[in-house]
Amino acid sequence: MSTQSISSILLDSNISKELKTIAEKVYNEERISVEEGILLYEKGELGYLGVLANFIREKKNGNNVYFNRNFHVEPTNMCVFDCKFCSYSRLLKQKEDAWEMTDNEILDIVRSYNGKPVTEVHIVGGVHPKMGLQYFADLIKNIKTIRPDIHVKAFTAVELSYMCKKAKVSYAEGLQILKDHGQDSLPGGGAEIFDEKIRTQICDDKCTSAEWLEMHETAHKLGMPSNATILYGHIETFEHRIDHMNRLRELQDRTKGFNTYIPLKFRNKGNQMSNIPEVSTIEDLRNYAVSRIFLDNFNHLKAYWPMIGKNTTQLSLSFGVDDIDGTIDDTTKIYSMAGAEDQIPKLSTQELVEMIKQVNRTPIERDTVYNVITDYTNYDFSKEEVVV
Ligand code: V47
Ligand code: SF4
Image: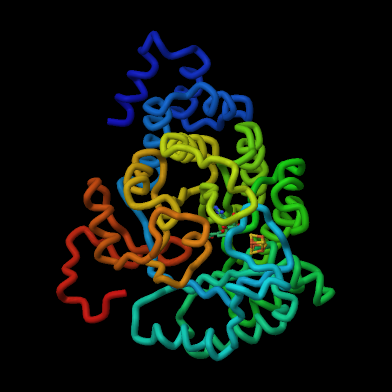
């Protein structure tokens, strides 16, 4: 079906020569250039982009839609930094709405999942000067004592860079300490937009783009995989989005350490960029599709459903997306505080599976590194003892 659709693009007299050349490249599994990436954003209409992105998606991942059973821990929302788009952080001096969890409160969250079949804990939060490298290393060790089987995906490069600088250790030394205490991988946050001029305008004081990339490269070399994000739909241009992906594509060529790319749509509630309108759903879908076409060396493209809502998530599965994250309980506040579609980001596994089946895709529960745990095609939920 996808092949036929690409053929129809090649025969369509309304489609320009340049866009046909890109379609041919996609068909032949050739990499597209930076200029071609920008052209896709500027000239590729939704149907055309969907055909190409879906072709790649089905080549790489068939009909599968991946998700995992995870929960979030956010130790604090107090942060030394002042990102203009952030609705979540409270500067250290602003105590109102701020939280700071104790070790025991964090470990109680982990204990509350005893007996439940979660495979991953995702730990991120504000950058708090009192919570340093050794504090987090010990915390991870304690989490692993309670739950030795769980995969710990923790700390954005922003948090890690701050921790390492404060502890006066290199990135490699800091990551090795965390790895030795049980950290398995890094989430993709903190990337925002790599273009230095835009980064200065939206998040001037946190780690630089070069530092973000260095942290992930170092992690990959130590055998810790990671994810990559982009924060799109604010003051950046199409050129900036492609430049961002190009820097990731180059790093992935060297290390192959990225699991998935996660476009995060800028939401404008309760932050210092509230005057900027949010982009449309069509732009979300176009962005997924161009990302899928440009990032030929990324195996997976993730739509973060709590952010874009269930309907757009279902649509995204025809525009290159093959992963919809997890069954996140109401443990993350990053998105509900920024105006996400689903104010209470919680879906049971059964609801997630239904959402995928409704659009005729195959629901696959995965672990963090995409090993298949369960194919839910013919799964009988009535036999499950504990549903998360
Ligand atoms: O880096 C903050 C984003 C990110 C807003 O690796 C906002 O599996 C939109 O990276 N509008 C942190 N986005 C979260 C993150 C993440 C999420 C899910 C899965 C994974 C993964 C990683 O949240 C930040 C920033 O880009 N963010 N404020 C906002 N107003
Ligand atoms: Fe702090 Fe992260 Fe919010 Fe920036 S995005 S202010 S680093 S919590």
